[in-house]
Length: 266
Image 1 (cartoon, rainbow, N blue to C red):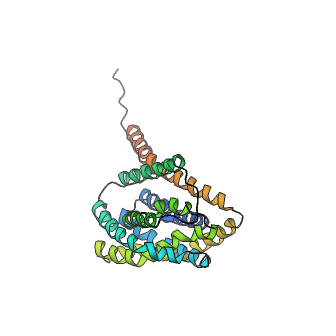
Image 2: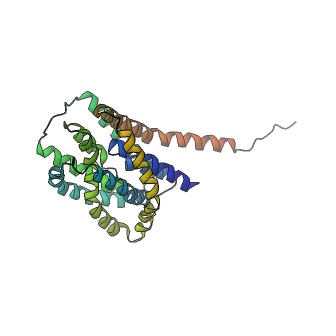
Image 3: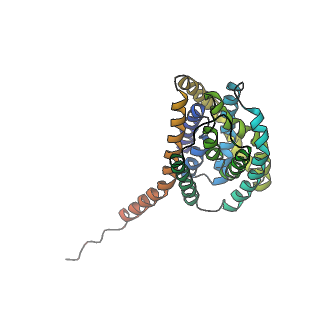
């Protein structure tokens, strides 16, 4: 049954990411945690499976990708990624519920900030903003393979065409992948690759999701893509935050139902 859920999660996340350009690991990592995976295993599984889909999306939108900006900010992301992998090593024994709630609160806070501070998309942003966002994204990517949220709002602040919006974050992640693999091996040993290589088995499913996602994206305007990205972040943040509470309530109710019923003596 676990494998069926893994297939559903990977297909759904690959489809969503094909349309929006992000959200594979952002949604799949906590979903895998709910399926019983440890945080390092969930990160390793999404690392390879999401890389397959990202590579196809990057190739599809290769003429629209802003490679100059990517190569300029990627060194800062590498520094952040090293820190993030160290945090993952420290937090690997922590409760998955705590990890999800922390990121849920962060995502919701960022979305609220986005609506309070309205940034009009423009052609260029200060160079330093790209370095800062890249560094923070690298930390989150190294920690839980979810470096998308900081980059999403930075990307949306640019007046870019749809395909450049879709391809920038996947291209960023692909460039980080070799460094991420090296430091995951250093931190967790060769054993972490066994879970990562499982992602290869799901490539046919990812190809199908990529095909259907590209068909769907043809009738989506840039405004709809922006709306989809924001709604995905909001739903994910809420799910991260409330899911541990729901699980706790379900556990308590099941424990109450299992208590023996003591009949009064006559």
